[in-house]
Length: 82
Image (cartoon, rainbow, N blue to C red; front, side, top):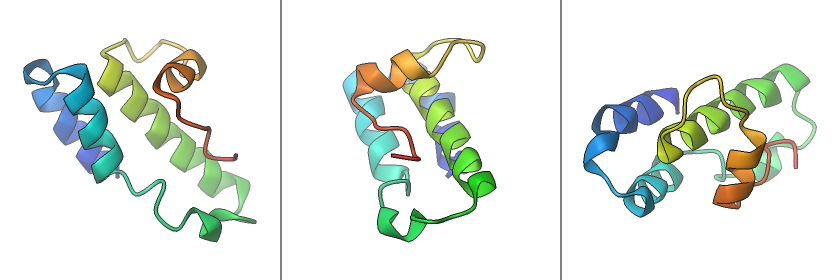
């Protein structure tokens, strides 16, 4: 998952925000079989949340230090634990 996010980051300057969002959603496996994540260890959920946060920062082209919560809201993405 992180590989795809980094790949998008390399070409992000060539993409519109809408296209970057579409790529991030398509290449991400976060929504695939999310029922399997029910009851997963907190460490696994935290790792997936970091991937989602990174994807949001790449799509919206904001610095790594930016808080991810408002970005997830802007993209209408639920946090992984939800």
